[in-house]
Image 1 (spheres, helix red, strand yellow):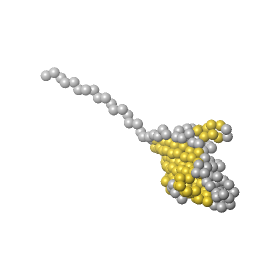
Image 2 (image 1 turned 120 degrees about the vertical axis):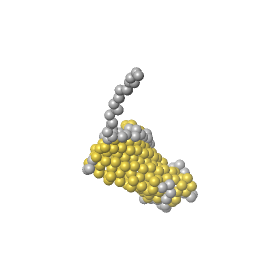
Image 3 (image 1 turned 30 degrees about the vertical axis):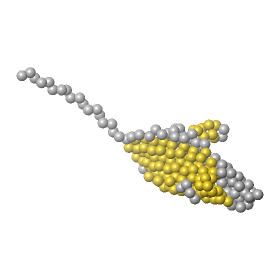
Image 4 (image 1 turned 120 degrees about the horizontal axis):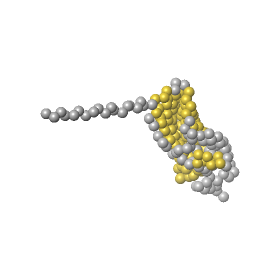
Length: 210
């Protein structure tokens, strides 16, 4: 019997040979994601190594990731994504039997490269990190680590956070995506627009009768 792959779920059977899934394949339980969808994936069922050479999407409850390419290991639940990386979070996540919000408000993180630790639920972003959250919150930095379990976004290098009209810059900044708490360290600068006083109403000149 020749080995076959279910396009909805990769059948993990001990065939002893690496194989490639082609033509709109979808693999489950890789790097902590419920589903990975792509046109092509090279997957070694013995050691868990996989390579995704083309654009893909990876999803699990509350989170979806897209990028140009990736590689990793399904057994260690590690994924390295590269090129036009987008991480979108929008739903509650079940954590140890309790429903907890991944973020209080929907958010999107973009970067050049992303390292995902599926076991620890860590997303390490490098290169042009840009984080936006519903409600007008916007952050940029050289690198960042987003922790699903603690709802913390740790940013380093040229950090700049904008909340409405207020801007906070620092070398290092930690942001709680659930409570909104900000903790900055190193060259912290807070900039807020100065409210202009209302114009003074001048009395109108009365015309004198001639």
